[in-house]
Image (tube, rainbow, N blue to C red):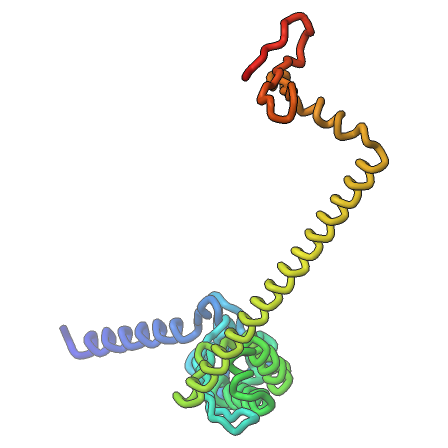
Length: 275
């Protein structure tokens, strides 16, 4: 192959290669859960690029992906309670970059938005809330602490970012303080048990008094009924008799020892005499 033909072949290959590279540089793909920020020769476009395929100016434009899906980051917080006890709280912060803030965050804030915007404000909010509670209250009322810290952090971040939740994964106190709180809780449980026992005994005593009063009232009513209606005893005897028991009548004198047994049924049978 002569040099001229070889030169033309190389030139054509270079042109094709440049065209392929230019075609590749003129397209982009924004992955799901991201939005693209277009930068052209150092100038940032005011509109973000939605997810999917698109075209741009080759070599002079770049598409910077910004996540808009929910993200989670762990954050340790060293705090002090109102009684000047050191408390270490392990946090998990759930946050999201809203679409409306994608371009603004890229233009006005450098670095990781969590490190620069969220973490300082969450730490500040948690420290403010814990400083108003004792160490014992922080342990017992962690849900209340979380709610107040979340509200305060959202106010501090404003609408630039969305703080969706703050999870208090672990609260660590000094060993001495943990033992003191545990001892106090045991004492409170024992006191509550003692109060319950006293209340139970009082209820049982009141129940016994009420029962005794009821029985006395029943006896009084029966006594009055028997006094006012003497025949009531005989009526009760007849109602309770099963028809089998004989009627025994003592006979003779005081020392005779002779008893007559008379059945209470039909009067036909003769009396049986036992000595």
